Image 1 (cartoon, rainbow, N blue to C red):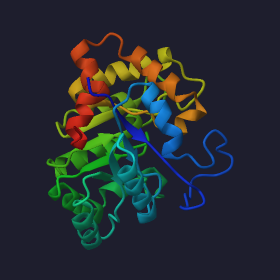
Image 2 (image 1 turned 90 degrees about the horizontal axis):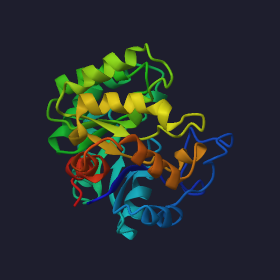
Image 3 (image 1 turned 90 degrees about the vertical axis):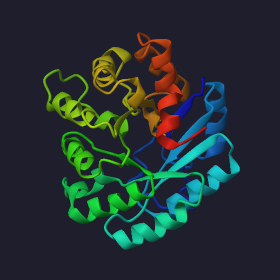
Image 4 (image 1 turned 135 degrees about the vertical axis):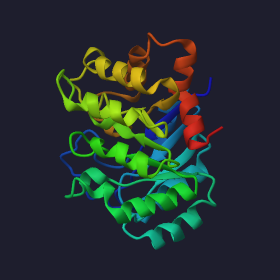
Length: 275
């Protein structure tokens, strides 16, 4: 069974600037590089990881692509392009699409002051260019501001494969919340996937706390549109790489063997074109 961790980061603060990363992020502030992650990945039996952008800069993307070229266990990179300029998007993707590690892009939409940024006409036009290159879009729709826009994106861009990172950060512990309706609406579009990542970044959340949200996502998306991601090193705020991996096994314990194979690698292999 192919096992893929679809969400891990890397940063070296002496080489690349991360605007959001501050000293108060004590659990993961500092340099976190692939050589630190490699033994953890191999101990868990993970075959490949997907390295995901952590800043809206080309420098961050270049750094990830270099890491991927030196580490055979990094199966792909989710980089960044400037979605506010469709021509620049096209020029960059023409270059990136020639790199076998570049699988798609992400923008930190939750960092934008405008909660409707991702559905601006110019952004949708640029995402159309991304779709034309058959590359993927990692959406960071932090609830409650962005998840509601995913069905709109799916309708306007039916050929763009997109995945909801971190299950849109559900309000753990709230049984009555629009998150359920909005996630269900997103699941209606066949080109929208969901990523089991970030659920254990908070040390106060247990498997029992998270379980109802994961069960709901599996029921609505199906295992063939759900994938695992560790969110390392951000996940160090809530535990270790090994604990995130173990807790994920518990979350999907009631799934069939075939479903587990999809969640832990099969879905990701198809989505990000990793083999």
